[in-house]
Length: 379
Ligand SMILES: Cc1cc2nc3c(=O)[nH]c(=O)nc-3n(C[C@H](O)[C@H](O)[C@H](O)COP(=O)(O)OP(=O)(O)OC[C@H]3O[C@@H](n4cnc5c(N)ncnc54)[C@H](O)[C@@H]3O)c2cc1C
Figure (tube, helix red, strand yellow):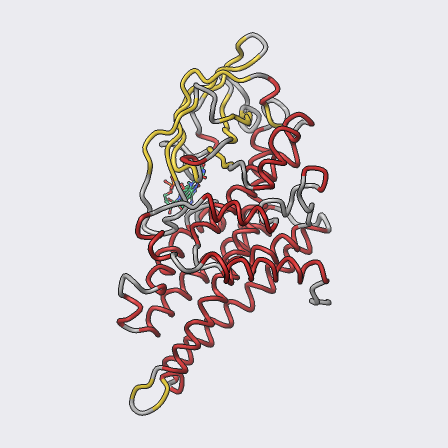
């Protein structure tokens, strides 16, 4: 296999690296402490084409395939220290932009894609509810017919980007439908008076990524707001999860690389017992394990992207990437903390922030247990 990046891939990765180094990394700890989302950074990402990676050319994007998108997000993970920003971008791309590109009507694409590409608009999705976490088929948000349109009622939990979103994809259930064919997906403009933010959540990590409840109260939408066919919402959702699990994997690989370089440099420069701590096998073994996890995760990521771009990947491929990279990210973060010693445990250290940021990875986009369930069912 040829792993050489083409010139276009090299150029987009370089521009993402330069953006991160120039504009993103100075005030990260402060933003993390305050849990503040930056629309300014979001718009800069739009300028270099991050939100537009997957959006077709005619809507001001680049229309890249899975591999080029993953390489770009890996670069973002490698050079951007603001993981909340990366997480919000990935959620926006995979759970809102991708479904719109794949299932949107001409009118939906014309209305939303150019604004999403530039960063002027922000999106997300809401499926999770109080009694529907891992079991997304248990959602109770209901949709009923109302003349030519629909009325939606229910409450969504843990919706990434909701506090700053201009549009949300909302999944709702029709009464009396057959399982797997009872859910529809709607594109809802957050200016609609029937949709509002509920409680805002403060997270232990990824703190610059805003998260809240979304309440739908007699939210009236038209048939033109249906995304994909009526009652085919789970197909839309599964397609977005396929993308999200692979693209989050790319972010994880990049972030692990950034962390590894930081730990390697510390291990080389920190001396104890008259020599650099890297000379002690207790430390170098950790570096070896970290490197092995990163390199094997990266190989698996590229292979999965290649399979996807050849229409050969299935849901279990995406689950394997998500499982492998999120578990590796947690392990590597704990090793980083150990190698940094007490300094890494201090609240102004990036090391403790990486530990907090990493712990969410085995929960979002389906927990590790659910990824194993999906993979097991495909064996
Ligand atoms: C940072 C973050 C951002 C998120 N963003 C969004 C968003 O934008 N939109 C959205 O809709 N949701 C979002 N979520 C919600 C996320 O998708 C859910 O948290 C996730 O699906 C798990 O659901 P739960 O938290 O209710 O856990 P539960 O489903 O209650 O699971 C609890 C535990 O039981 C285990 N478990 C459950 N069922 C099984 C089973 N069958 N076999 C084995 N173990 C099982 C789980 O693995 C877990 O360990 C976000 C979550 C986080 C942490």
